[in-house]
Length: 133
Image (cartoon, rainbow, N blue to C red; front, side, top):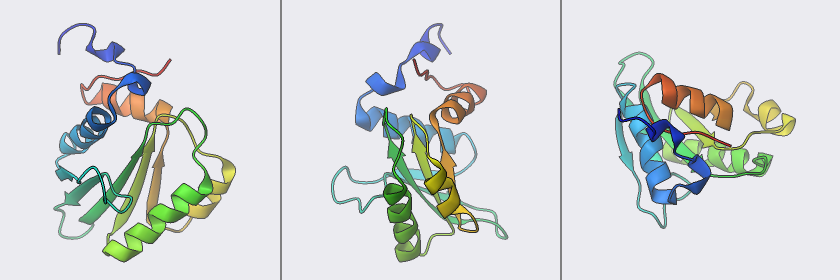
């Protein structure tokens, strides 16, 4: 990876490039991944398939380039999409963070919340660019 690519400010990225970056992150984790249409995506930005025959399945991923805390209503909406699509898991990835209401809601549900600090760490561990100021 060329020098300086880690300095890409995730907040300043084009929204489509940010979705593609998140899709690349899941590709590096051996998932079959595709981004959805930019409009009419029903709250799904990336679809991944985990090929593991025991724990795998369809994963719906929503991507939010926010500066403010993601509201619990966004998390609840993702859960509805997971159920509607028959997915095994839903993942909400954001450049910001989540409040206690969101963490309470996801307990015992097939949902994972990835906040900005964790996202930057995951990107770095997989050789992908991205920082947050």
